[in-house]
Amino acid sequence: MRAVVYGDVRTVEVREVPDATLEAETDALVRVTSTALCGTDLHMYDGRTSAEPGLVLGHEPLGVVQEVGSAVQTVRPGVRVVIPTHLFCGTCVMCARGLSAACLRARAEGPGAAYGYAGMGPYRGAQADLLRVPWADANCVPVPGEPGDAYEDDFVLLADAFVTGWHAAATLAEVEPGDTVAVFGAGTIGLLGAYSALLRGARVVYCVDGVDARLDKAGEVGAVPVDFRRGDPVEQIRADRARAGLPLGEEKLGGVDKVIDAVGFQARDRERPDQERPDQVISDAARLVNPTGAIAVVGVYPDRDPHPGPGADGHEDLVAPWGTLFSKGVAVRFGRTHDRRYTLLLRDLVVAGRARPSVVVTHHGTLADAPELYRSFDRRENGLIKAVLHPS
Image (cartoon, rainbow, N blue to C red):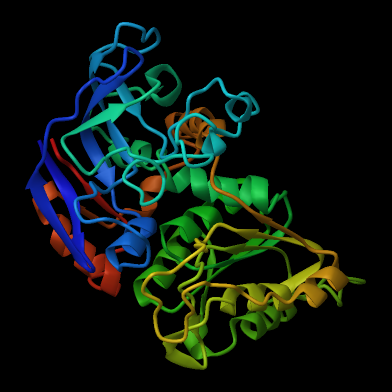
């Protein structure tokens, strides 16, 4: 079968690799119809993780079940399914609590596992013709329709991007109707975090970035774009809140109620754009968030960075503004997305016409197009925000 394989820093290749096969009676074999590129794939592409050459990339698959093991009961060949990024057993203590991203059985080295993800287990990725899905009854989520229909791009985003955006807004930030929200980073996760906050009834959502295509897309999903190239985004947002008019008695609440960090450790230093400043967003968030508000961190912060960029540190030990956060009584929540909590809810919102996350998809291609799409994605070129590959 064909697969997109990590070769070296900023090099991916499309290679023939051994076909995925059933390895246990609880497995399913899925023929992939759509598989998306993710910002986390770029961390590996840029050499910022411990990815080994030969790793099959990709963790956002949608496809059709081709074969199942003898113990699989709830899916059968021919069923269209989306596969959550974090594979899980469904029965361990963590899974029983709904904490599927912290499964205790999927990876020997520690909790949690994922497809095509450095340090997250031995599972080959989904940017390929076929994918082996362990514990298929737990990990295969049926979706209606046929491959290539009008919902193809919506359903593939249920594997990771939409559920992560929803996780950030609903669980980590706890966005409620009437809240004011700021999202730092208008990549796919930031955009879908903003979109999710609006679905949950946020009064206004600001989206901070410095790439024109992303800012335009933020406006398209209903957020207020904030270009940090034009000045301090915290002050821009405060000024906009003041222009809109703060309710009587709330003049001291000129920030926002909830902040989402969808950037992570590769944030740029605004004063020196050629430098990275991993603590830039958390510093801005602490200044912007209102007292007793919440900050959700979904941007990646690794334990170790093998190839730190200019201004960054290989250990990524951040000095956070704890005094400000403490004095404001702010809740700060981190955590991988427990995908399976949200897939059915968000699937049903899509089917009901209440949500169309595919608004963020800008590019399509085949597996053969992967090297060029990775290059454009990494360079923030050609308006690429979210690319979806179609192996078949």
